[in-house]
Image (tube, rainbow, N blue to C red; front, side, top):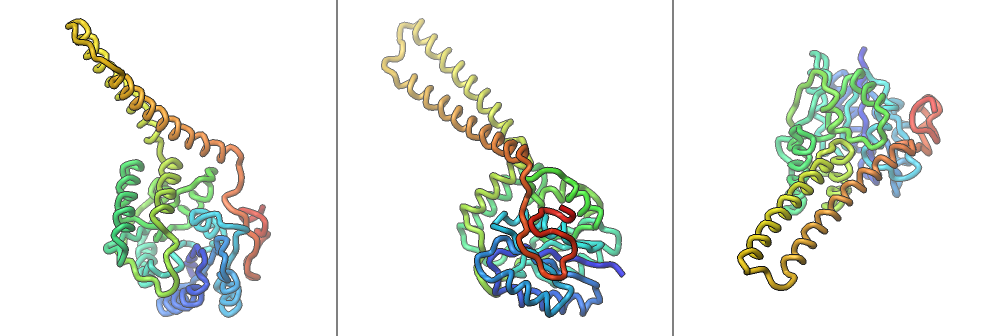
Length: 319
């Protein structure tokens, strides 16, 4: 019988662990799906991992691990993929904003031959205007940078074991799971869902954290910002040539520009482009520096008793 692993990255979600585990367990049993739940506490400051320990003792199909500190959602996803033993793996939010009722549809499409089943948002649910606008801008920018439609995409998806193994085989440290699952290819199907309201707790995402997330993922998956530096350089040169021609013509006509207004504007424009270009290049150099150091994506400090292998203090099975 095929096994389905459900990976649930969790950060300060102590109020959701019990409800999420019972909801998913009940749903899997009702649909006759052999399953395991894998909770990854991303350096939570509350009692998230204590709740994971408790529910794992009540249900041996529930396993979990805790990071030594907060490493981010991407690290939580890949840690869950490392620990997953299933023939197929679903990644979803711990707060159940990704509706569990969609999982049986994904499972059925996988049994019919799909290797990646993408959850596509049909409705985003209740969000503030500021968050909705920032999220819309984020997805438009990411779609343009990555050359793929990210407007309705999410981390909610099912991956076949061969896809999981491909992603785990990638050596890069700065990962973008949502885009990498597109990049990997394989036979793809989609299911639509509506984002649900959180029953407990508050969202950990803010406009600022979303901006940081966008910049980090854009530079880890695309070189387009670097190409923009070249475009800005060419635009600056073109502007300088036009300005030089204008100044020369006016000089020859005996009507040269007085004062330093033009010079100051030229210096400001070129200086601004240079500083922006240096910032973009510097960010890429920082990413290269992080990759070259070869530090792990995450460090596991504790695991539940039913986790096999020596993973405490390690960043993947066997270390």
